[in-house]
Image 1 (cartoon, rainbow, N blue to C red):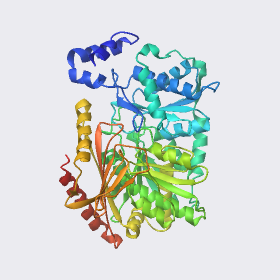
Image 2 (cartoon, rainbow, N blue to C red):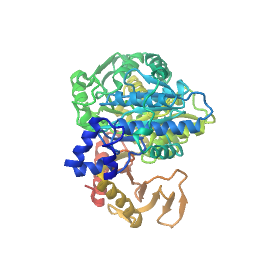
Image 3 (cartoon, rainbow, N blue to C red):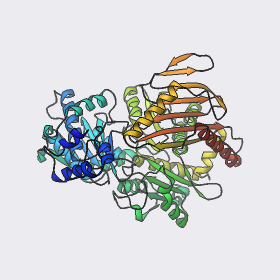
Image 4 (cartoon, helix red, strand yellow):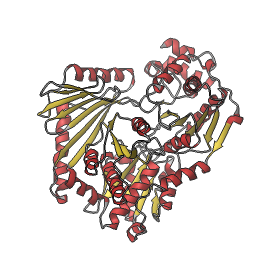
Length: 572
């Protein structure tokens, strides 16, 4: 590690970087270890890390080396192509534009044609542009919903989806061969960088508008009041515009969070999964008597919402609840419009609510599971086309995709469809909250929680590794006094029935995930994050709901069951 750090004091590194490394060597041993103990790796969301000097940091050199490795792999795979084409986009984070420019120049240094967006854009538009421009790859510079210290590098393949096996591991191998900044083709040909912008926006927005399923210009739709916040990110331009084009006339944007700003000054973390991120939007909704609040993260691929409950109070919905509303609305309208032919399917991830499977079953629609990460949903779409028709996919972490012209989660189209679902419900004299509780009475009331434990640095990574080893070597027999009846180990691809001892295969790629299924139907899933220094625990519990007015009582019971599970596992 010291050798790696000292190598950054020599070679082709700028003086600012050298000064940062010298300071780490002289004054911050712990910081030095964290900055150099490993190279940034492609995980479930690509390359992501804290910005600064070091091999484990996002900086000009790690971005350049990653791009050179990706370029080398692209040249090996597409060796017969006269000129490889790539798209590069970026969001509002600090240094995102700079890293995007570095990426574009290294690509052109390798002889590529590069399409570079003129300003910040949502991640789903990058995915769309790859397919629209018939490119071989793409890169999005973003750290999604991470705190302001982070940035990242999402690599995409020619199908518009993030890299999966074998491409992700092969790119890592190529990046690992880049042992010096001197191996990077820094000097590109700027004539091979083609600036793109509004022309791609127009095609992308038109495709979103084609998704509409509710075309009546009703009084309810005209009266629907929406508050939207981009949380200082890339959704600021396209989300209000697509809502306006969809016929929503009362959309209020949170002024203090409208301008792109990588410091995210009004929130601790620009993550719509965190309730505090929506505080300003909810206050504005109360002032304007809005019916719906929507918030997108900095790269506009996730959306969180709040709706008015039966008492008229704004309440936050989690990602599973929003998914239930969106999936039910889309499938209902497909059915009513006669669009279901028997070839359709929806997709969810293994840690997303089973309620979606129940909804799909009521429409006789298949609902396969995939591993956590939207790239696996995109891969299934690719493998199923053209024989089957993808309708909608989603994950509990606030990511949804309607239609298949984008191959990643898309908060821009999701915002349009969520608003449409609210208008459709209002047309029937209901709120989204009414619709959600009615869904629970039909399919069962589900409550899900996520608990993320942060364990930073090298010591934290080892602690997480040991936790997973302990769960495997000493499997839990009961949790919260309820017997564990089944354990799914996605690393060994084994689904073990503890009652019979029978083991069946799990037909998915291997992944470091464990699921404990209890006798009462509760599901506890455990997985280390692929993009953050965290281990994540997902809890799902369910009970019948006999009437909508009993929702509060049943929800409280289910939440107490989750609290008991957390206490039983001694998580803190």
